[in-house]
Image 1 (cartoon, rainbow, N blue to C red):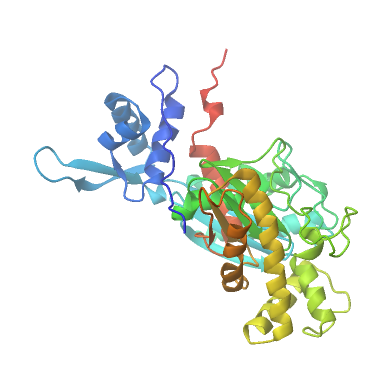
Image 2 (tube, rainbow, N blue to C red):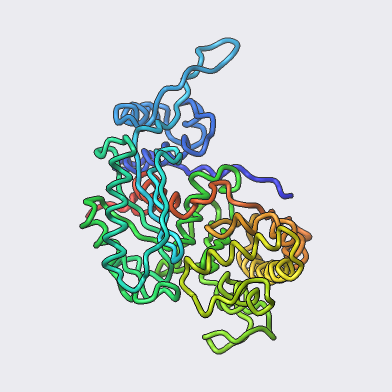
Amino acid sequence: MTEIRQPSPRRGTNLPRMGDFNLTVILDAIRRSSGGLSRVELAQIVGLSPQTISNISRRLLEQNLIVEAGKEGSGPGKPRTILRLNPAGMYAVGVHLDPAVTTFVVLDLVGAVVKHSRMKTPEAGDPDAVIGIIAAEIKELVATSGVDPEKIAGLGVAAPGPIDLDEGTVVDPPLLLGWDHVPLRDALAEATGLSTLVDKDVTSAAVAETWAGGPSGSGSFVFMYMGTGIGCGIVLNDEVVRGTSGNAGEIGHIIVDPDGPPCDCGLRGCVKSSCIPQVLVSQAEEAGVLVDSRGLTSAPAVQESFAKLCLAADTGDVKAGEILDKSAVLVARAVAVVTNTLDVERVVFGGPFWTSLSHRYLDRIPPLVTENSAARRIHGIEVVGTGVGEDVGAIGAACLVLEHTLAPRAQRLLLEG
């Protein structure tokens, strides 16, 4: 197992007109320290003057975004006051729209879930109707959460790709039929009255890991998202990578089995045609492990059948076990392609289908990734399950809001002419 490095500290700047950026740098440093930081420690970490640290800390305390959490120190000298994030200082709502299940959370400032709900995703052929149902659930969730609506910074939505990040639209994802250029961001903003962000589900999951995953969310890693489809979120040196259009991480057409089933791209043995739950369920039906579903291919039906397949494997069905074991080998090949390309230190698995696969995949995939690592003589690659939990997509969606509001971003350094 490789050593988990502490996140690289971001540096502030003492140049004029940089107050907002410096404020987010200090917030980010406090957030990344589980035990909190003193003003002296903050000055050492972010490279700002003690006076700047003092001024910004005062602003953050007045805004209730941080709290003074006791004093620490021994020996001569004045004990240092520890600053920590105030969980009740800000909240965000997150929605994860998966073709099988839609999950909702209200998150506090430290990434803890205050309120949670889940529903089977309604039939996807009528996006307007689905959006109306989602909006109603959001309102109900906020109303029953006990959170002051004035403290909710916004709504984040994690959706299957591809998406148009600038327009906030879902662009014909393969498993949401009828969702072609659906203005999800604007529709939900209008229906809920909340400022809304939309991002890819795999990217949102990676964001969740950096905000709430603990040690597994630091450094450089890929988040292997196991849902109705399989995708990959990317974090390099503590920065989430989105790509030119926000659609980084589409790994569905990596070839993992050259002699495998044909894919709709014209090739054979892609991740999409060999590894996703719908394919494994079909294999189980052909092998007699599952009763033939007579072509039922809706995402909720696939999820239910896939759970039965995993249960059969766990209870000793040899054929079921062989199907899942082979899928682990194929997924490991895709992981190796990605880790060799990006040279990361860790692979984090998660998503709505992960729990039922976790023990089998974590037993089989790590040695395969190591065996196929181009850098194995230089560093290891850790393979772990998410530190966030089953709702990583929805938590990530809410973290999008916190990231957008509070994380240091290059845009904050742009000066108006």
